[in-house]
Length: 240
Image 1 (cartoon, rainbow, N blue to C red):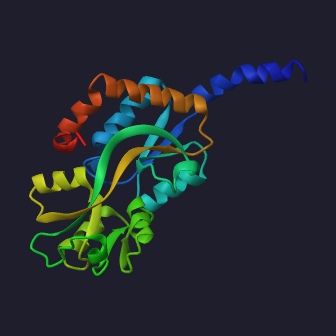
Image 2: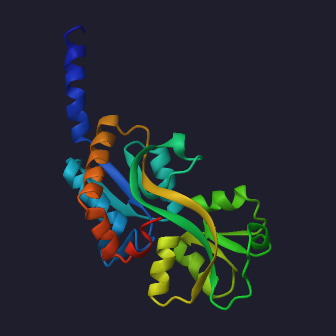
Image 3: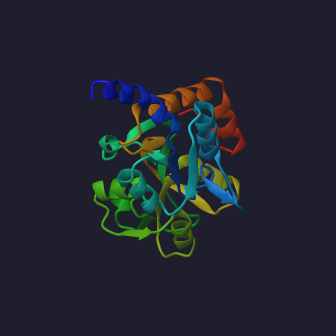
């Protein structure tokens, strides 16, 4: 036994290196989205680069947000992105960050009569978001009485455009991108300022987390992150 224990200890770094991480995400352009069979987006490309640079075997899969978050929290060797790092989630994951920083804004369909000037005024309207999204927590914490939950962001946006909800919270960067693409939407209020990250199950070894963070730090330092923001139309509100 005395001979076996040192051998096991010596093999642990190699086991960590050989482990495969399962990276899960949702469709939330321009951060994560699918074009045919290809995953694209400012966060997808960062994750792909940092995983390759750190030499970690991985898979990537897109799915509804609630399932992606559940897998990362409850299944070993799973990580989810692009995930807001807030107080409620802090102790539930290990973190690699930032993939980006952004504010969350409450938007309406252009010309809508729903034009609140304060959070209290906004509570009078139907507000939609995605099930288990961090914005659900923000709305509930602030006492919004009428929260409409959908499976994904695209369905929430469709509800806004068809009048089934009055307001919805989204990343300010995504709002800018949608406006640039001609979506008839307007921002009303700023709900929060957030760091968006990779959130990993606590089972992921610290050695892997450290390698991922080092690679992300290098992507930021050499300007690659900023170039990806520019590529996906996110540069205009990057200085916050």
